[in-house]
Image (cartoon, rainbow, N blue to C red):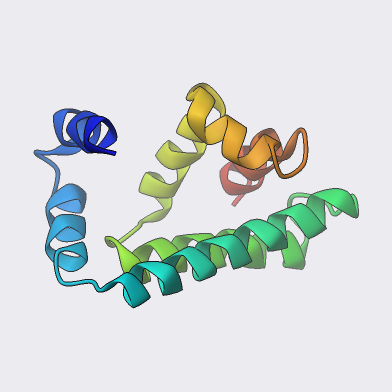
Length: 120
């Protein structure tokens, strides 16, 4: 975990989002982190449901998942604008660790989440 934290600090340590996230999470309890994970998993399940049922990227359900994704990040970590969210979407397909998180749920989900976010 320390290796990951070092990478995050090196890549984004000078950004407002990093500073905001560090300030928020420094006060979190284990219960807070567990609640954040539940929110994140809930959003992932919304995407998995939409993907599995062949919903189009612009459908109300998929775009509601996109909004829920952005809101969960904003709630727990930092203010997540549409532009920041689109940068995250790029990382979901470019970084093998993020791609694995989604594709281990359902193969192809990382690309679907990316495409859904980019379609907003």
